[in-house]
Length: 260
Image (cartoon, rainbow, N blue to C red):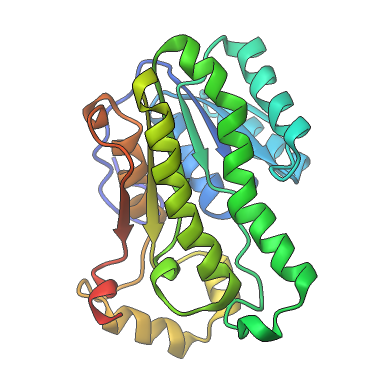
């Protein structure tokens, strides 16, 4: 089987486990949700754009998958708690949480001393507070199950001097370690995946073609990333095979980091 980008698709169907993917109305979150559904997972798509999440869930369901779509503001504790309860009420279990919701924004490379305080607060609220609140919301259910997988979507940008976005993603890596330490005794693993430059609409909006060509040339693999490249890492961390792997951040960027 191949995905829409023509990349070989190696995964076998799962056994109906439940995954929550935040920020899943579009972009990578949507792609991850579709791939999880193809792998046999029951998928809860959560996004501040509830209509978009529902639309994708309906498309997954019409293709034979099992999916829910609803609104969730990851920066609001009450909203994330409602998210977890809704999934439990529907399916009785939460096996995997993918903290994908994030904000890159148009001011990624602004000097920190010139970053507007409101923008600083917004980026940190979505990129750092959001994964914390979502993890807190699902943790009691995962503890009760004595099993769970949390995967945070970080960024190669965590290791590049790049303003508040980079700061938020480096802090997310530290949050990953902290959560892994606190939850490991309950059979819950917490890991992060750090994508490089991706072949997605947002990257084409925020970079010139020359910029993307340069990123591809500086990669050892000589191309920018595809959603399946990142999903493969998420899928591993979500699997039984990763039972003894926690507190890790895996950069998936074609080897670009050797140039950092």
